[in-house]
Image (cartoon, rainbow, N blue to C red; front, side, top):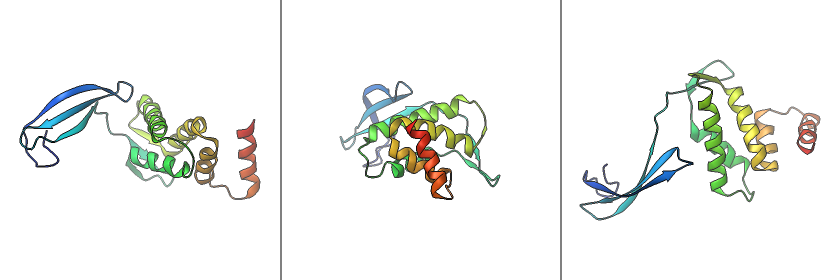
Length: 149
C-alpha cells in the first residue's frame, strides 16, 4: 500500500479490526520511510450495479449520491454522522441483497424512504418532498398524515 504522505510503497499493517458491522476490515498502517500512520479499509468487491433512471438512461450505482441526499435531508437536524453512515450501509445492503445487475431508481428511492423514516421524521418528509415531487400542498399533507399514523 502506497503511503499517502510520501508515496513510499513500503508500509506495514500495525493493527486490523472489523468495521461496518463486519462487512469491512479496518487496517492501521505505518510508513517505513516517513513513519506516519494512516488507515485503510478493505471491502468485498461486489458486481457493479447499474441504476435505471426515470428517463431509461443507465448510470453506475453511487453510494455517495445516496449519502449526499440523506445528509441534505438531515440538514440542521441532530442526526449524528454515524447514524447516517449506518443508514447508508443498511440501504446499500438492501440494494445488493436484491442480487440484480440493474435496479430501478424508483426501487432505490423506496428503500431510502423506508430507511430514512426510521432515522428522522423531518428528514423523511424533506426527502419525500423531493423524491415524490409533491405538486401541491394537499399531496404534501397526505404524506404527513401517513407519517403521523
